[in-house]
Amino acid sequence: MILIPLLTILSFLLWRNSYVEFKPITFNGEHYIPITVDSNFHQHLKQVLKYYHVRFKENSEEKVLIRQSLFNNEEMILNYTLRAIDTTWLRSHLPD
Image (cartoon, rainbow, N blue to C red; front, side, top):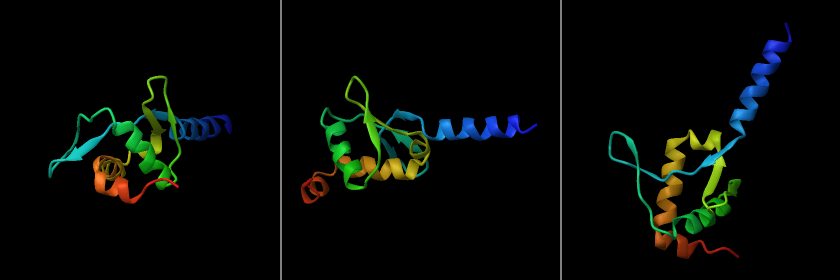
């Protein structure tokens, strides 16, 4: 009997802490939609995530991977996307 709740909790924790590719988005007033970004985006995104102390990984293609729990927060993904394409923000928040 205790095995089922234990497996459920374990599955949830594994899912929540798994890493998925960051997908940049924008908001059109009604929906979040994916956008195409330039080749510098992932480097800029890493700067943004480091600034906000967000854990991330990189895959073999040097794309940024974030935790599944963050990926599901579209408002936060939008905020990180906007920061990563905002050259003024990037210049004013240079790494030490």
